[in-house]
Length: 161
Length: 83
Image (tube, rainbow over the protein chains, first blue to last red):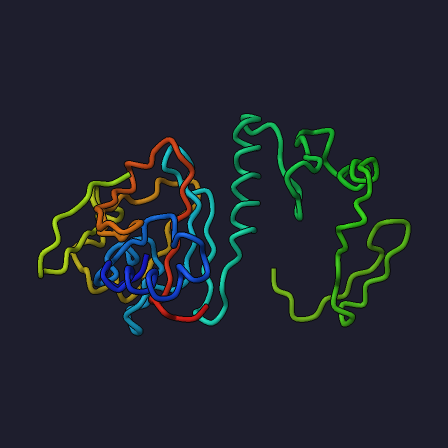
């Protein structure tokens, strides 16, 4: 959805997008003249008169499960959106009894939150088969030393949480 | 999903539908636009209708028509903006 008219959407699909996506864009390209819908979602930039790059994941009940907003120069990643939806679907199917840890991928182990899991995630993770395809990389400046499969000391500058 | 529209010279528009999201501040629309409020996760996505281009047709899309399905709603600054 952007402030462009659906006529411009057609031109963009005809002239450019259909050359990158076989058959053209398969989903509806929505028009939001004046940014009225974007304003309600909180991503309309009134000064610039355009929407920012906001992505909302909405579940079958119409509830917003997550969103991500980026400045114009950086594009989003469809694979990450799909990964998140698969995670939300798994949690939903489990009726909230399971949770997906950070970096989770479909088919990988999940966590079952409860009193017994408090402080024990590191132990549970040691029982999971190691996946050589997943490598966690930290900037050298973080000065992380890895020993016995867990992080002994972490010094990370310029990180706010 | 969505009905096909008759196309004339006037540019069709859509907009939010149903109950206003923040009734208290609706009195001063300009203030809302000046201080955009992000919606919250875990809350209902505001419903809307919007004209759309879909596979060679011009249609009208209503978000609530997609209840029962997972939806990814993506906003972007504009067509032909490279990224």
